[in-house]
Image (tube, rainbow, N blue to C red; front, side, top):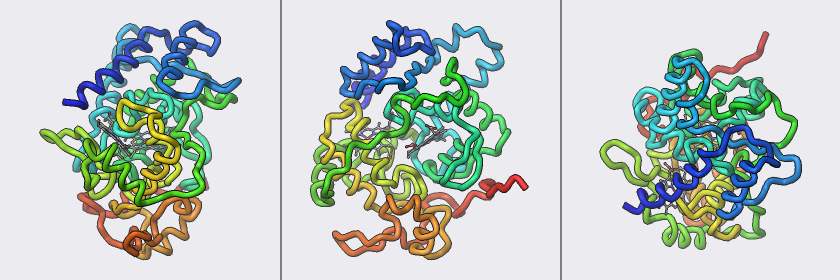
Length: 340
Ligand code: HEC
Ligand code: HEC
């Protein structure tokens, strides 16, 4: 299958990096090789003073001088991150794995590598207006990106996932002052005009072969071969990926799979505009009124199409009670916090 080929190509690149020792500094020969691999793939070189970190791999874990029990728990975190479908029906109610969006097992730069969260939290987070821990950041991706319910704080699965994040950050100082190279899904410059119809055409040409014309992706033997971009099997309206700049940044740097940065900025934005203008499960913060919910979370939803009218057919997006295959709207273990 085409996917296997592309994945082999991608993991080939990752394997080369695996030989490189972790926590290299930008002037190390190893870091130079790492950066060359990325720039050869079309990614920008680090800016002056950016923190470059080469996360260790699971092979490095086997050689690491840490307690065998910790290794066992990190392996479990890795397994949950790359096969999150094993928590389907309990914590996950769509077709995603964590690694569906965080490519390269959460290590890939420009694909929101996950280790920065382990060295920058606890910190204040505007999305929920309070100081968040690493566990709470992970919980956020469960509630929105996985359209689910996070494992309980302090549970075995939550600690295993946290341990995997922290392991990938091995050697990085806490609260680094430098900006982190390749963090998040950096968006290319927004072009003056976006076109839904052009986005639709480009989607059919470049994406539908894997993600299908209707965006539902493909499942084979209860495993996700191609994740859903919209519809019931995808992330809900509260997930970061519904923001058009995040979607454009993801697409430009990661898709089509195996051909990062092959689309022009205009193409990436047009496809993103088309993709984020499709229906998906309700935002767990829904008040019963889409316009009121969008207004209440306007810092977030000013970047999404939620509560807006789609020009192509006049549909008010997000105006429904559909929570996908999740039998509830809001997980009962995501609570506001006041430290009072
Ligand atoms: C639908 C895509 C998607 C899925 C699936 C997903 N995430 Fe994310 N994740 C995002 C986006 C978008 C961001 C925000 C990136 C940014 O800051 O631009 C993010 C950010 C993060 C961060 C913070 C990274 C940083 O730089 O601080 C962590 C940690 C994280 N996700 C963990 C997870 C875990 C664990 C799972 C599985 C339970 C998961 N994610 C599933 C899209 C996703
Ligand atoms: C060769 C198959 C293939 C092609 C072509 C492809 N993708 Fe993907 N895409 C994948 C796979 C596989 C993943 C999940 C990554 C993983 O599991 O390793 C993914 C993940 C994604 C995700 C994050 C997860 C989600 O479901 O939201 C988005 C968004 C996405 N692709 C958009 C696109 C867009 C837009 C295009 C066209 C420009 C495209 N893809 C082309 C295979 C493909």
